[in-house]
Amino acid sequence: MKLTLNLASRSYLNRRALRFSYLAVSAVLVLLLAFNMYGYLRAHTRVGLLNDRLAELEQQQHVENGTVARKMTPKEQERLVADVEFANEILKKDGFRWTLLLDRLEDVVPERVNIQGIRPNYREGSFSLTGNARSVNDLRTFLDNLSGSPDFNDVYLLRQARQESNYGGSLVSFSLVVKGAF
Image (cartoon, rainbow, N blue to C red; front, top):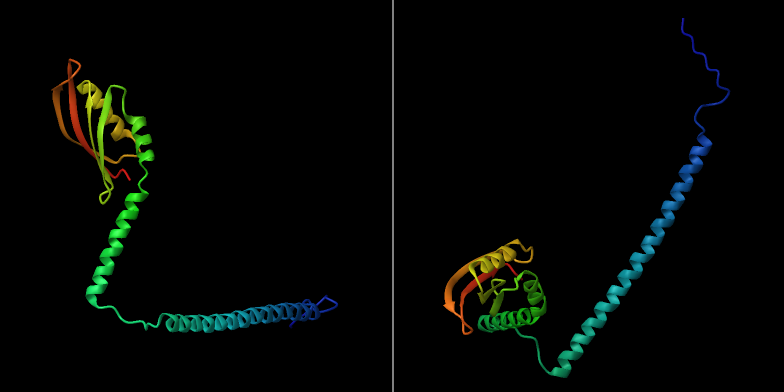
């Protein structure tokens, strides 16, 4: 015996509402497709007009200059690359901000240490520093401040020597290199 009992008065799936929602979604998608096609055709036409205008301007430039573009020889290319590298190096040197470096150094130099000279090395991003300290402890404090600063990565003491001061007493002269400073 096979019992099938359905107490629903109508079908569970509302096919009419489902078809209507399919139709609404399809209409929205068709509208979006039409809008995108219009944008694409408009952009494609504009690109074509711009390419035509660019070709016209290039032709006009060649006519006015009376020159035709030619290929460069390898020697000319090497010379051009060398000139560009030289110009980039000058721009890098010009981009160096001394005030920023001096401001950073001012924060780490103790009172009893004076700096006599700073010489940057732009290629390595480092600088050499020469100066005097009143004592070895002052020099050590300066080196600790430099090493502990987040602005300066690697600090290397190159030379230290005790020398007589012009005003009496002795000083510790030093030179060091700070790498990764800029």
